[in-house]
Length: 339
Ligand SMILES: Nc1ncnc2c1ncn2[C@@H]1O[C@H](COP(=O)(O)OP(=O)(O)OP(=O)(O)O)[C@@H](O)[C@H]1O
Ligand SMILES: [Mg+2]
Image (cartoon, rainbow, N blue to C red; front, side):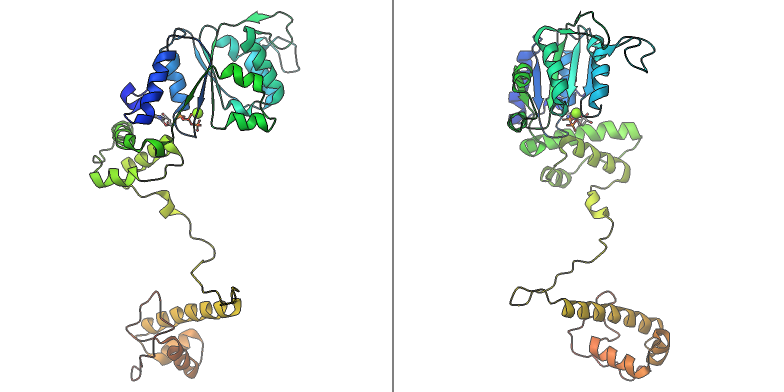
C-alpha cells in the first residue's frame, strides 16, 4: 500500500475524495466506489478497510465479473456437504470469511439479477445460508462495492436492481480519471520509478522535466495502471516510448491517396501508381547492386535492356535517387553513359 500522500495525490479532484474518505473511516456503512479502469478503486477499498473499525477482520475481495453466476453463489455463501455432486465437504463462503471484516464486491455491475437478489438480502439484515443448509447465519460485515459502469444506466437498461443500488450506495466515492488530475502524474511517476527500480534492481535515472511534461500530457485511458506500466517499461528499457510505436506493421499500407473530384476513389489509378512505386524501388535496388550497370541490372531483374531503360525514365531514377522513395514525378535525370 503506498503512503497516503501518494494514494491521494495533491490535485483538487483528489482532495475532495480524501476528505470524504476521512469521514467514512470510522463507520461501517456500505460504500460504492466508482471510476474508470485503473483509477485505484481496489487500492482505495483496501485502504478504507485497513483504517476502519473492521480492520482486525479479513479483507475479502470477490471479483463478480470473473466468477460465473452458478459458481458465484457457492463461493459467496458456501455450501454444505452433499448439497451438490462435488460438495464432498462443507465449505464456508466469502461472506463468512469476511465476518467482522470487509467484503469487497468488485465489478458489482456484473452480478446477474438472481445473485443481485441474494446480495440484497444479505445487505438488508446480514442473513444468509450456505447452499444446502436450512440454518440461517448472520454475518457482521462491511460491504464495499466497486464498478466502472454507470449503475444508473444499468438500472434503466433493466440490468441492475434499483433497490440494491440504494443499499450499496449509502456513500459513493467517485475516483477521477488520471486526465482529470494531471497535476498528480509527476508525483505518481516518481513514486513508481523508485518502487520499480528497486523491484527490478535497475537504476533508471530520475525523470527530466521534459519527461514529466510529456507524461502529463498523455491521454491515460488506462489511468494509473497504464502509468505504472509505462514507468515499468522505462525502468527496464530506459525509454518512455509508448508501445504504439512497437505495433506490428499494418498489412496494407494506407498511404494517402487522392479522391477524384466526384468523391470516388480511383482504384485502377491507385493500383497502377502503387505498382510503379514498388517497381521503381526494386529497379533502384538492382541498379545499385550492379553499380548502375543497366545491362547487368536488366539480367538481374529478368527484363530486357530496352524495357529497363524505359522504366528508368518513367520512374525518373538516377544515381542520386532516394532508396526508399524513388520519385515517379521528378523529371528524368538521365543516367546515360553509366554502362
Ligand atoms: N494512488 C495510487 N498510488 C499508487 N498506486 C496506485 C494508485 N492508484 C492505483 N495504483 C495502482 O494502479 C493499479 C490499478 O489500481 P486498482 O487495481 O486499484 O484500480 P481499479 O480502479 O480497481 O482498476 P480496475 O477497474 O481495472 O479493477 C494497481 O497496480 C495499483 O497498485
Ligand atoms: Mg479493480
